[in-house]
Image 1: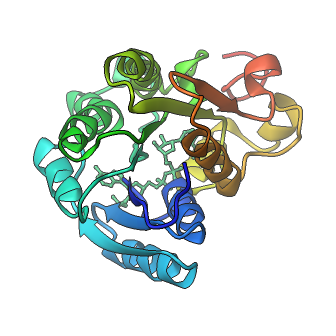
Image 2: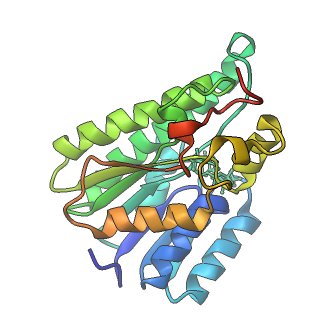
Length: 248
Ligand SMILES: NC(=O)c1ccc[n+]([C@@H]2O[C@H](COP(=O)([O-])OP(=O)(O)OC[C@H]3O[C@@H](n4cnc5c(N)ncnc54)[C@H](OP(=O)(O)O)[C@@H]3O)[C@@H](O)[C@H]2O)c1
């Protein structure tokens, strides 16, 4: 798929991975619906950068963990929707036994229901095209302290494979990054402790948001890939643990 003039949605694109994806699509000439929930200043900055990068777009501040929020985002698409990137996510670190209902429900809603609702709402405007879900290696390996987050990221992988079959010819893919240098990734690194990346990757460093954006664009552009989960984690799922020190 060529992206020039194509309509794209990137949920949660005020900063971090979502912003990197929005800019990457904009550099190829796409129209991007930028979305954030709280930080309008960050989302406005993403839209400015999208325009500077040679794309165009619009901004919708909406909570995509609700169906109404997803509907608002989809309504902003001028005509046919070609690309939906379900990127918005929230990780609340807590031991399983201490998890409170509010943290459980928010993580289910932001990490899983957002992708489910936005994909359903998007179908009204999609003929062919691509959906990419932001999963995580926490959906593939034990992630102590991130039980609900990881379970929802695993659920996204299941949803990706089933929807690839059910929604064809729309293609549905996912990426599963390791620890990425964003606000969310930095808070996780604070918990995992100094030098985690040296002990738990083969590359000796965390993943850049731009590397995730490259992977997402690859999955969008290659018309033969559907139902696929692309892991980019510097080898953490091969040799590492998502824990502080040697043992959980
Ligand atoms: N960073 C990592 O290490 C890592 C690794 C694997 C996977 N991921 C996944 O990659 C995605 C992006 O993560 P990130 O690291 O870029 O996170 P981030 O730096 O915390 O940015 C998250 C973005 O999503 C927006 N957002 C959060 N909840 C939202 C909601 N309900 N409705 C609309 N927008 C919402 C935030 O905007 P507001 O502040 O305005 O709400 C912000 O712009 C997430 O799905 C995350 O789970 C991250």
